[in-house]
Amino acid sequence: MESSDLTTRRNGRQRRVAGASTVPDHTGYMDRGETSSPEPEMEEDDILIRRSDSEDRRRHRGRLGIRGELGNILLLLFLYVLQGIPLGLAGSIPLILQGKNVSYRDQAFFSFVFWPFSLKLFWAPLVDALYFSRFGRRKSWLVPTQYLLGLFMLYLSVTVNSLLQREKGPDVVTLTAVFFMLAFLAATQDIAVDGWALTMLSRENVGYASTCNSVGQTAGYFLGNVLFLALESPEFCNKYLRLVPKDTGIVTLPDFLFFWGVMFLVSTTLVAIFKRENNQGRGRRNVPEETQGVMETYKLLFSIVKMPTVFTFCSLLLTAKIGFSAADAVTGLKLVEAGVPKEQLALLAVPMVPLQILLPVVISRYTAGPRPLDVFYKAFPFRLLIGLEYALLVWWTPSVKQEGGFPLYYYAIVFLSYALHQVALYSMYVACMAFHAKVSDPLIGGTYMTLLNTVTNLGGNWPSTVALWMVDPLTSKECQGAVGQSCSSSLEAGLCVKEGGVCVTTLDGYYVESVVCVVIGLLWWLWLGKKMRRLQEQSPGAWRCRVNQ
Image (cartoon, rainbow, N blue to C red; front, side, top):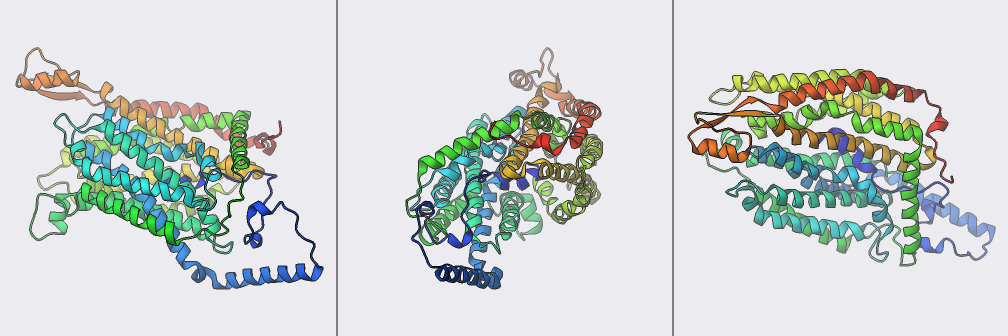
């Protein structure tokens, strides 16, 4: 999963369309369904007194600062941590599957697990509009989705070993279905928590919501991916954490799933019982009116996409990452196939955290001007070259392997390669986000931005799935040691082994794919890249959506 994926997940909720009535924060004590009813006439002094009381409450709440809402901030942080757990687990499964010699076609099938966060725009309006007002607008979705997440994890804790350790190989179809549901539920929970954060925190402290989002999701992903892979590895635990070696890690996948399944159920029950939503309505909200707003949102999205400049830009976003797909999707799996411990690869992400924090700050200085896509265009060929360097790294890896593993200088080179890749990736990502903010129609900025971010994420998802799918068809193998046998299919490979032969790879499809992707990427850069740069010369009116037409 790319970094852009994590950042743009915050944009899934529905925004209020321009022209819709808004209620000031200090009127939050009333039911919103009552705002349209006529108020009794009041004396001017009464109005002034109410305004003064409201301002006093706001000043008092502002003076409290973060201390006055520390409980709400910690709750938001915890909810986002929970959200990152299933995402981290989903990211660790391909590495586990690779150790069990599944095909790259199976890996491609499992990659659909990472699509829901890129597609959540399509059901986010429903989450915003349909709810039980007495229970709470956000809790109506948060509580059932987190209960389902917990139940799915408990189900997996009982069945995951049988799904991974079948005689015929892992049951990739069932694993994909279950983890797809986990990702779908986590994306739905993200929409609900993002919306709740806007009312849970006061106006003075609402800026902490994005901090809770980024820190919580990162921490949850770290727990579900890096920490789990390290503690699940017998080699890592025996080398660094144990005095007496054992055949298993400190933590097993069923134990990890059971623990977090229980955590989801317990924490969700506590939230459902003890946490009330701020400014919660009392049943007077009209659901049909909200449903009409949902339809208006979908019509608005369609009207945005129909605009010539937006349609061109979306087409470019959907094809821009084809050149990087082999490097981004396949390289890590190829390193595991070559013998690099999966937990060591996961741990390389830890020293990357400071770099990932600093890069957006530094790069934003160059994307803040009128032409942010110039940075995108200049970083593009460097990221293509890093893809070729990744292929060389995979080719070099088997020759470096020693009896005790890989030397320290090898991991230093892998780390440096990954760091350079992050610089190029973040340069393109920050430039793209800056351009989205620049061209989005301010009247419908939330919907506009979310649409562009969704297209950007999809532009990375589908090439990665295709890249994984094409590795096996592009790979050539021959049967050595058995006359008249071949290895063109899994059945023929099995016959080769039965006859005393062995299948040897003569041409790895990963290298073919790496070269083809770089060539496609170079052609895209020379032809379509310039077209993307010229979009910056369009007038602001070319990006404005005429909603009423």
